[in-house]
Length: 138
Image (cartoon, rainbow, N blue to C red; front, side):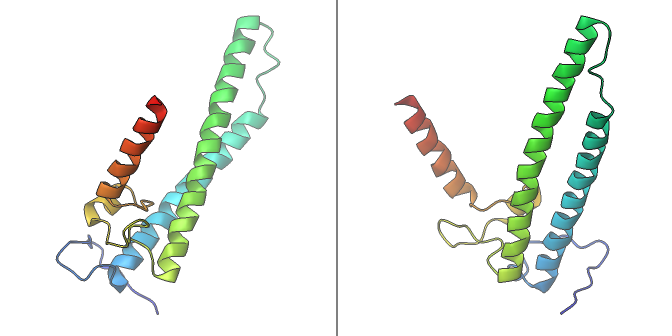
């Protein structure tokens, strides 16, 4: 089934949760975000292939190596983010998108707008973070 989004559509708490239009809105947002990350990744790869390790000055070479390490870390973060986006797209397909993995309750629309890959409601996320802090302090 194809859903056409109105150009000014924004999901709201007043409509049925994860109706076809809302699902399509988040699907398109996730796809656009994924495309942007892949484009940035391609640019990073092209930049890394340009080199920079042949700098004659040792300080320039060290600076280039630091930049390269930072780009690789960023690329790794982007790769993990793309995997989370893919998982969110899969949840849209299987109908579980927008539901808290812990409670099964709907995740607030404002949270999904801010973080479309969210898998936990704010309350469940806060519980997880409190538990992490408690265990870290042990």
